[in-house]
Structure formats: C-alpha cells, structure tokens
Image 1 (cartoon, rainbow over the protein chains, first blue to last red):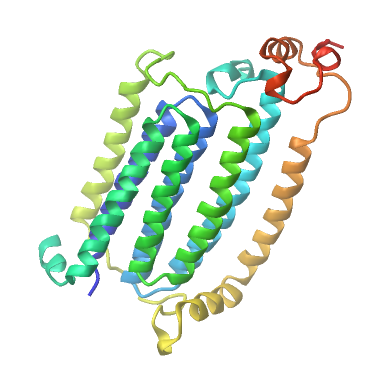
Image 2 (image 1 turned 180 degrees about the vertical axis):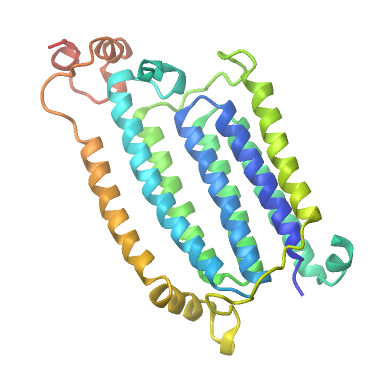
Amino acid sequence: MSISGEWYLGLAAVLFAIGAIGLLVRRNVLVMFMCIELMLNAANLTFVTFSRVLHDIGGQAAVFFVLVVAAAEVVVGLGIVVAIFRRRASTTADDLHSLKG
Amino acid sequence: MGDTLLAAATVPDLITFVVAAAFVLLGAVGVVTSRNAVHAALSLVLTLFGVAVLFVEQHADFLAAVQVIVYAGAIVVLFLFVIMFLGVDRLEDVEAEPLRGQRPLAFLLVAIALGGVVALFINAHWVTGAHSVAGSTTAGHHSNVYLLGKSVFTTYLFAFEATAGLLVTAVVGAVVLARRPPGPLTDADGAEAVEEAGAGTLDDTPTDHEGAPR
C-alpha cells in the first residue's frame, strides 16, 4: 500500500508555491524559466497522483503532453533570451522595460 | 484524515516518499535562492530526480523514465548550454529589490493561493465522479507503458498529432529566433549596450560592424 494521495498533493502544492515565489521574486530570466519548470512539475505530480487514486490512465497521458509543451516552451523561451541578449547583453527582466507601451 | 491512510503505507514506501520529498523541496529552494544560475540549474536536476522517484512510487514507470531523459537530460542541459553560451554565469545580487514592496507582495499572494488550495483539499471529498474515464491504470495486468501507449494512440490521438505540429513550430521558431540577422542591429541603445559589454561575451567577431547604428 502506497502513501495516500493527500501527501503527494500537499507536496505538489508546496512545490508550486516555491516555484511561484521564485518566478515573482527573481529577476534573472533564466532562473524565472527554471521556476516555471518547477511549477509544471508540481502540476505533473498532481496529475500522476490523481491518475493513481482514480485508477485513470488519462492523468498520465496529460503529463505526457505537459512534458512536450514544456520542452517546446523552453526551446522558444531560450531562443528569445538569446535573441534579446544579442541586443541588450543582459538577462535581467528589469532591463526589458523598453517593452512598455 | 492523513493518519489512518498513512498507517496503511509500508515502511519502505514511507521512507522513499520522505526522502524524495526532501530532495524535491531542497532542490526547489535551491533554484529560488541560489545566486549563481548554474547552481540553480543543478538544483533543478535534484528536484526533477525527486519527482521522477515519486512517479515510480506511484507506478508511473514510463513517465519517470521520460522525466529523467527529457527534463534532466535535455531541458536542463539546454539551460546550462544557454547559460554558458551567454556567459551569464556570474553572481546575481538576490538581495537587491528594484521594485519597492515586490517581495512582500509576492509572498503574500503566494501564501493566499497556497492557503486556498490547502483549505480546498482539506474540506473537499476529492474522489468524485466515475473512475477510469480514459482507461484503467491496472486493466488486465498490462504494463504501464502498454496502457499509456494505448491511451495516447487511441483516446488522445488527435492531441498527440497536434503536439507534432507544436514541436515543428517550436523548432522553426527557435531557429528563426537564434539566427543572426544579416546587417547591423537597428536597436540604437541596444547596440551601445552590446558595445559596452565587449565582443568577448557574444562571440569573437569585432563589434565595429554590429555596434554601428544604421
């Protein structure tokens, strides 16, 4: 008998909160991306937990698609970071204030 | 609520969960607090491995393997590659707070959100609705890979094909974004910033052709 689902869900909630704090507090764009990955992993953990508790393989299929979307997001995001760095020589989000309207 | 269900867990399961959860949280805190981006990426690996262990613990074997291969193997390497490529692996001042009150506000908002989620799942009866809408995780004693593959290629076939389109779009977009445009950069003050930072941080070409405004 495995650990009950509540503990996994609690862990996922805490992991998501840490990722959200990092995304709001850190200013390095690369670290902000990593915090997004933390939040995605928290969501994945929740999906897998519900998949086990409800005996439904659909949760694991959802995680599969989240992985694909996360990979695509990182590729495009890092491409944008590289393109910005060419012009700005900086990876700090504050230096992109010229994007303000 | 948790005590009765926790008592049903075997000791190895309990130890595995506690150790993996400790790794996950340690890595997550490391990502948020480390001043060096490389250290943050390595902390992220710790978290990803912890989550993979928790996947194995919940009988999601295929996803655990994919987690290690795709996340720890590809995505973190991509992060490290960009960090090294840009040469931004110097320390960041995490104490500085350019926006006044940003940090307390961030903690407050996240605390409210976390409190809401915890209150929700303390009060909720979370096993609701029909079991096994998309297929059981234990049907016919097939392996996890068999069941997941069958689900992805039947129930979720359209979504699976759509991810192919997404990946192609992402690859093309990344190539277009990362391609060096011919001719000088048009962003005037951006060109100055590149010039100030020196050519060594970008590549070995001299700055005079890319630093000059058009």
